[in-house]
Image (cartoon, rainbow over all chains, first blue to last red; front, top):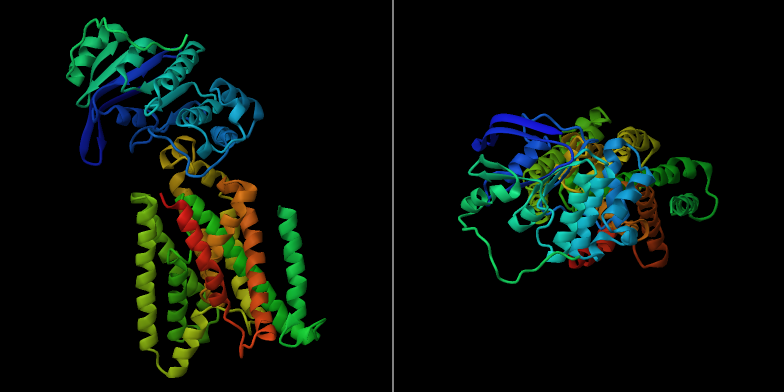
Length: 226
Length: 312
């Protein structure tokens, strides 16, 4: 469970978000959608307590993964996951191990993160968030730049994590992924939350925010792996 | 690894106490206490401080090219010390020299960290360091042209080249407290530097006080590098080279490199100083090569190698 109420959120002297009253419950996968510059990442950063005047989130319960999260040094995958234990002040082996296995990078634990594929590196960064064993995940575009199969794998992992009781909030550009995996879709346009509800029902509003049409497309499509 | 480094330091220390202008062997107690012991102790202290500072700076700035010398912090420390020296403050009050070195290094560190806070990208930081180096070099040149007499000029120039000969135990007493304090501050930053590997935002959400970690890095580096420059002059490249030598062995986690960089920096500078002492015995040199000149000659090709590897 996480909640944020703010009449406006500023970056410097620019108002980026207005009239924000946001709450998300445990056990749900929430997708934040909207065009570039709508304020999705800012909302996520506000929830993480990264903006001035925002209450800092408890780092033991809230894990935040920035957009294009990378590691400056070539740590091994296991060392990256171990960074997730910093809020707890320990290096407990069990949660790190669970995180590596859950994210499907157990076999890469001794491999340097600069020697794995993009999808594997992203999952190693996710394993860092999982190792914290938080109640709330705040993930900014965790599927960006990934091939479709890797993106589906990560969304399925997040879906299962929400089913297991966590609150997972994801900024997503790929509306099809949001439609398929999210329990709730929030559409942000020009700094305001303009739609909030079941993804299928929110599609018209989301399409309008992107300037797209919507409907049933009968052409052959790629589907997630069985 | 730690065990091997300590063994190396012990061996080098024994050698360093046994080698000098008087030749090889067990020296006269006077030579041992007045000449070789201070020289050995200072090489270990200054080298350890430089090695650890390099590892901490590279971790905090997330840049493998960060080094107190390259970024101009050593130059700032030298400038501070030269000002104290030049105005004769250090002749009246001995600790003024390291204090001025500390102040200079502190100003340099503060400038770079303020800059790094705004634009943390690697190339822009290195450029800021180059600007700082150029400014301090110009100020030093100004101090030299305004020097009251040619002897002061020669003395300052000689001192700027960096060296450890003719130092006494009082130099050790001056340098030990700030370097030890700076190293203690830096050695406690391991977790913070590890978290910073993920970027400042991610580090902050891990519960890490990012600003405090950066400020402590600046303070620790200023203490260790400033006091080192005040007693040993300009000695570069130790902080750059040491973490790079250790990474293939210990991995790249910044926190894992701190203590080893302290030990390896101490060993490296003592080895370089031994080389400087032995050089006139085997080569036709009238004088010992200056230690700062030697580390620069050894370190510059290394920088080229690193630059080639980190270039996109």
